[in-house]
Image (tube, rainbow, N blue to C red; front, side, top):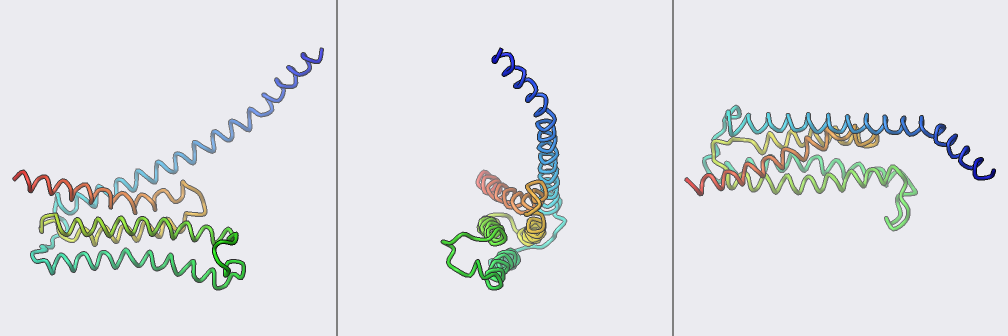
Amino acid sequence: MALKKHKSKVRRNKWIDYPAGLAHCSFFMVKKHKILTGMTVGALATVALIFSGPVFNLLPFQAQTMADRASIWAIASSITLVSLAVSIGRLARHRFVEPRDMEPVSRKQTPRALTLSQQLQNTLEQAVLAIGVYSVWTALTPASWGIMPIAGAMLFSVGRLLFFLGYSKGAGERALGFALTFYPSLAMLGCSIFAVFVSGSA
C-alpha cells in the first residue's frame, strides 16, 4: 500500500515538474539562439572586413616602407588600448566610490566590482591577442593589404562597447560584442599565416 502511494506521488511530481522543465528548455533554446545569432553576425562582419582589404582591396593604402607599417601598427594598437583603458578606468572609479571595494581584492567583492573585473580580464585577454595579431599582420602581409589592422581595431572597439553594454544581460546579449572582438583577430592571424605560405611558395 505504501509502495503504491509512493509511485502515485512520484507520478504526480513528474506531471507537476514537466511544465517547469519545458519552460526551462524553451528558455535555454532562446538563449542559445541569441548566442548563435550574435556569433553569426560577428562572423559575417569579419568576412566583410577581410574581403574589403586583401581580396577586393577596398581599403587602398600602400604600406611601402617600414615606417608606414609601424604607423599602421601604432594607430591600430592605440585604438585597441582605448578599450582596455576604459575598462581599467571603470573598475577604478567603482572602487573609489564604493567603500566595500576599496579594500584589497582578497576580500569578497560586490557583484558590480566582480562584473567589472570580469570585463577587464576579458578585455585584457582580447587586447593582447589583437595587438599581437596586428604585429604579425604588419610584419608579414603584402603592402597591398592596406590598413586592415586599423579597420580591425575599429571593429574591436565596437565589439567591446557592445560587450560592455550586454554583459550583465546574459551570454546572448554579449555574444555579438565578443564575436566582433575575437573573430577579426582570429581571421587576420589566419590570413597572416596564409600570406607567409603563399610568399614562401612563390
